[in-house]
Amino acid sequence: MSASTTLPAPASSPGSGKKTTEGGSLAAYLGGNLKQYAMIAALVVITLWFQFDTDGLMLLPNNVVSLIQQNAYVFILTIGMVMIIVAGHIDLSVGSVVAFVGGICGLMIMQWDISWPLAVVLSVILGGVVGAWQGFWVAYVGIPAFIVTLGGMLLFRGLAINYVGTTVGGLPSDFNALANGALPNSLGFIGNLDTVTVVIGALAALGLLVSQFRTRRELIRNDLRTEPFAAFVGKLVVGVAAIGYLTWLLANSAGGMPIVLIIVGVLVLLYSFIMNNTIFGRHIYAMGGNLPAAMLSGVKTKRVNFLLFVNMGLLAGVAAVITTARAGSAVAAAGQNYELDAIAAAFIGGTAVNGGVGKITGAIIGALIMGVLNMGLSITNVRPEWQMVIKGLVLIAAVAFDILNKRRGK
Image (tube, rainbow, N blue to C red; front, side, top):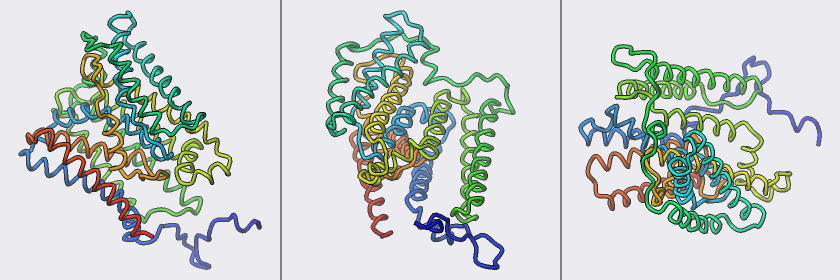
């Protein structure tokens, strides 16, 4: 192969003096990213509909805090589920793992005289051990993940019932604050706004601007294709506005910045970096896109699969701690249908059914859609059985839209 075949395409025409790294017209760019923007539009439309239908109750500051706290487990589990699905697998056991690990966490604190911070660390480690158990059968024995995790769903639910019994209550208030509390207001107020929340929101907006401009600069420097400038500016305006509005709502709430939102935010940033900027992340996408090609390219597929399930177990451990703290007790029946919520959020957020495609941020949007539906339907007193019907139809519609959009692009 000659050296010229490895060079990027020319960035400019002769004598033009201007790079043409922008990815075509704005219309073409929006059409190529239709799924992503359609999900954002759907989230906005659903939120505004419930805001109208509930006479403004949906977006009351305290209700927004409740939305975040009640759906934190979905956000956390969805992060790991996206990675699993992108690689071409599925995990049906996470709800049972949450019940088992959460139950052991409660026992460590209340019956084994272990301090709650240490119990939290040990619970996350226990989740990783559970993930390693399942990853071994998937990666090194070759049993399909569907079968292994279906067995895990039964196994760990049974262990939760056996060891926890019914309920382990009386957990310390400091532990419960992980899911129900807010950061201390150590900076006072700006008018009626919690200053700590305002500062965190301002830093988040600044971080978004800096990261996006840095990424765009690097793409241009390397003569790589970038999005049209109008789309870039529009994305930043919408992003900063969304952060600003959320900050205003949280700063007006009774407690301010929820602790669990900080936990979720750190996880989203960490795993977005892993998926987009590390060899491990590229290997996940490669395996889901074309497994034989990935194996021929030297990807250690067994190792990647094993680590994927270890990671899913770790995140299930985090979700177990948050779920237990939210309830204020360890319950053997916890985690019912959590795996379905995480899978649905991933698919609604644009993760491809066949693997190879999916983003952490997209899945978080999917989780938000599920959360808004849950809260909105509850506020409007829709019966639980009809809530399930509506959420099922939304899931089918999202996947159908994704499939039809791919066909249209061929």
